[in-house]
Length: 125
Image (spheres, rainbow, N blue to C red):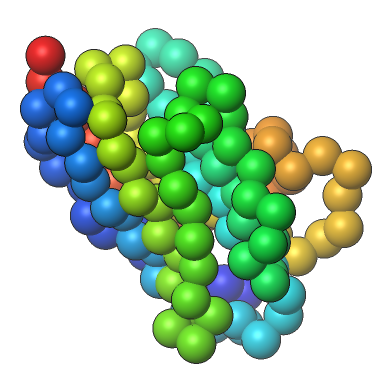
């Protein structure tokens, strides 16, 4: 079992920045890939970014490419999401997710077995 706890959400103006953190605990010795998803009111949960165990080859949703950066510190069992040039459409609850299974797809919510409780990000116009 892996427990995930997000932090760092809040209210920011358009064009501002926030950094989200996700701390993992429990059985963290396995090579988990870590991802970020978000869900706006009335919408489905959508993929934001994912990073593998080694931290190489991150993958981003087109909507955040060039603005968001995902990174991880395995010594701290923590993954980060640096969000820059924020827009009102980035407003959502952001969720951290983890999974260790080898899959063809890594961008769907069902590709992840462990989830955090979410942290609210609100971007004002």
